[in-house]
Length: 406
Ligand SMILES: *Cc1c(COP(=O)(O)O)cnc(C)c1O
Ligand SMILES: [Zn+2]
Figure 1 (cartoon, rainbow, N blue to C red):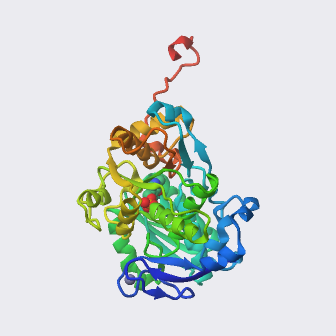
Figure 2 (cartoon, protein in one colour):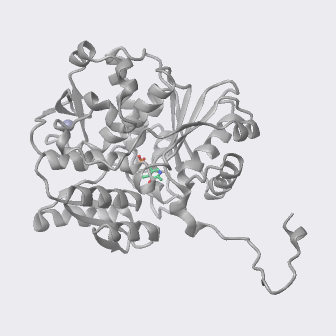
Figure 3 (tube, rainbow, N blue to C red):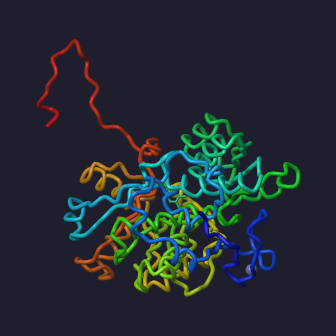
């Protein structure tokens, strides 16, 4: 069973009813967190029991907000590989380097976790029509899970979002709207349409449950390393739900006594062309400001202002980690380096974590003996538009110079 009890504001701690549809805090407008009866879980469940459970994020049922299994909307998301990457590790001088590979997940990115959870919980609360502003990948995931739940799905994304996101959303039946602007403009349109269309807005941290799906990444990191968290986790940050979710669940795990008080240093990575949280971090601020002219090839990082920015900053600072911006040239070069060394065709956002790690090694922020986990948040297969092919074209009626391939 689920031990979900209620919602609590991340800013002013105001409590909210778990059995009603909720968005953000009624008092202050900040994001809400789901809370659980950790004492009861502690009495009834051991971490050893998890071993035989399903190979998906739903193995952590007690720590998830969906009450009834019949409301679970799943395509098999989660329990992704934790891949040791010694070849690329050697290239950069780290022995204990790992990549948590979210490329192997329904819809091709970790967005599936958040939207599987949000759609399941929406179903449980009786919602049948959902809308979402997205930089691209979230739209694809919501469209898929919405279809599976039999809901009406509306997605708004920038008109220069990756084409694959428009196609995957439309093919599974969502109504797609392309916005001549950024995700923030798409967000305004969804918000303003709420009264007219009577849809539920599933925008990042505008509802409490996407984060509950994302936090399962932190649970898997813990379990896959036998409940000993790594020294450093490097995560690419757009809206921030990945890093916030993991940080949240580490506290829950400590509450259960399944881990101790030690934490990884949480490193939040953004692209130089859209780095509002890094800017706030460097200026010692608690919140970010809208980042003008946001542009990067790592489309998932193109979020000029995140509702949960203060929570990302808190996780980075409280853990002794940091926030780092890297250039598109660096991250594109690292797509190639990781892919060649390990056979993992990573997404640009995932590769950005390698670019940041290289900077931290150079500055002495990471030691060569430390255990580091990079998050590849999606499959490179969703980004083929960004790459040129250098293959020769051969006329089969003529003699082919095979040696030219070497
Ligand atoms: C959305 C996205 C991110 C950013 O994730 P947040 O949790 O919103 O910070 C990173 N990588 C990919 C591939 C994404 O789609
Ligand atoms: Zn509040």
